[in-house]
Structures are given as structure tokens and as C-alpha cells.
Image (cartoon, one colour):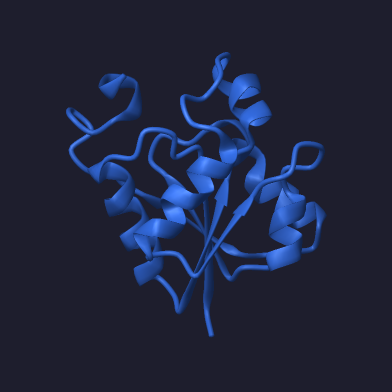
Length: 132
């Protein structure tokens, strides 16, 4: 069983998110989705999310694409990767922040998941920052 993991805020769900999740799922047998905590979104984006973290978890679960949906951690954002130990980590085309140091951090932790970036889906229309 090949496990795939992806991360996101998933605050305002749109077709770009659905595209991303389906592409991620197609890379393996099981998809684990890690939802950013409210505090992480505030730290990274400088503002509160529209939907509470528990609601965002339920929104992704309701799509029935992911096999497991969990909240990330505040203190060590890489800890969830160690716990779930995916073979593949999927990043969106515009994900930065911790994603920029992901490869080095995985090496430090003696992990070697394949890291895949998925391109955008009509980012001229379906980009969260443009939909707000």
C-alpha cells in the first residue's frame, strides 16, 4: 500500500482544491490530508481563517476523497509526517513556507519520501486569494 500525504488550509474550498486532492490520491493507494491549524494559518497568512479548523477537517472529510484527514501540529509541523510516514508527499504549486525546507527536514529525520508538486488548475480563476 503506497501512502500519499498532502497539506493545506482548505479554507475556501474550490475546484482547484478538488483537482489537487484527486491528483494526490491518484499517486497512491491511501491519501492522508493534513489540515493547517487556525494558529498556523494566522502565523503564515497573517489573518484568521474564515472557517474554524474543525469545520475545515469536516469539509475535506465530506468530499470522500481522503482516507484520513487530520489536523497538523503547532510546535513541530513535521511531526505529523513522522507519525503517518507517507511514501509520497504532495505539494501544491504555490505552497511555500515549511515546504521550502521539507527535503532537508526529511533528511535530518532520516526519512526519504518522494516529494511531488502538482501544477495549478485554472489558477486564473480558482485560487483562494482571488476568490475572497
